[in-house]
Image (cartoon, one colour):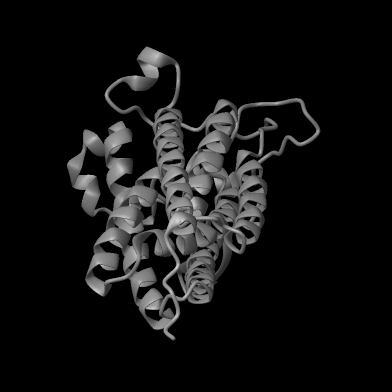
Length: 277
């Protein structure tokens, strides 16, 4: 693994930071391109994309504060360089992005579901590249394994993230990168064929919730606990969020699909106005 690309003087240029920046830039590009294809103004989407990224960063940090005891017990670490450099929690970033996106959509007077569908195509691409950054840094590591796919991390990764040395671990970062890449390709295909607005974002939510729920069984990095949920249920905080997200997305999917079907039926049954003679 190569957690550090190079240095400018004494300042390190970390692989994680470079890949994260690349993930954000490409996500904004895909967001604007797919949204523009759906009739949304691209210039507005570029502006909105920047605000969504800011909301995602804030949300990921806030959830990190909730789940990590070291930050809850030492609030002064909120202003430390270590906190600013930490990656945060993806689900917190997703919630922050959705809240910011909704506010931006209202401000710019855009269609929420069409914007969300475009964003759904961009999110998994960003996740794919971002998880490669996690792999390079050694964070978000998996449980020990004797499988052929097990990987050993370097001492440089251990110094940065505390990843165990001398043992083969499940490359859970690569598992998620591969799965989110497949989700990205599928959603691009689905977006061209969607039957109602909101279909793409809701399918993404269900697919990722299932994928994350399964991957969590193989992760072994310390990620804290929200209100003792992990202790009481045996499931991680991310798995609990996955369950709620899947259930909510499924309900909304069925509601919106039904409404779309009713609208099509109503349109078919509406009387055709007589042509003027």
